Image 1 (spheres, rainbow, N blue to C red):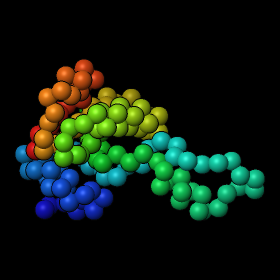
Image 2 (image 1 turned 90 degrees about the horizontal axis):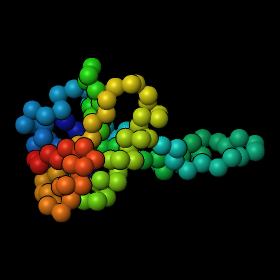
Image 3 (image 1 turned 135 degrees about the vertical axis):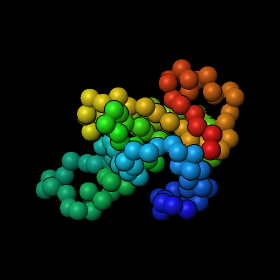
Length: 133
C-alpha cells in the first residue's frame, strides 16, 4: 500500500488505495480531519488541556479531504453505501465550510466497495458522487 492510512480500518484502507490506484484524488490529501465544535463545557476557571483533548475526541472526523486550486473534496470511505455515510457527508460539508471558509466549491464523495441501489438516487439528489473501488 502506497500511503499509510492508520486512521482507517484495514478494509477501508484497501478501498481507498484502490481508488488512488485508479488515478482518483490527485490533489493534496489530508486524513482524519477534525471539524465541528465537539463537546465542551464552559468552565470557571477555564478548563485544562484535558478538556481540549476531550473536545478533539468528540469532534466529527472526515476520512479524507482533497484540496486542489479549483476546489475541495470531502471523502467518506466505507465498505457499503449507507444512509449513515449520506448524513456524515452532509454534516461534514457544513462543518468544514464553517471552520475553513475558502470560497472554493466543496464536492462530496462516497468511496465504497459495494453500492446500495435504494440509496443511489438520494446521493445523486444531494450531488454526492459514488465511487466504487
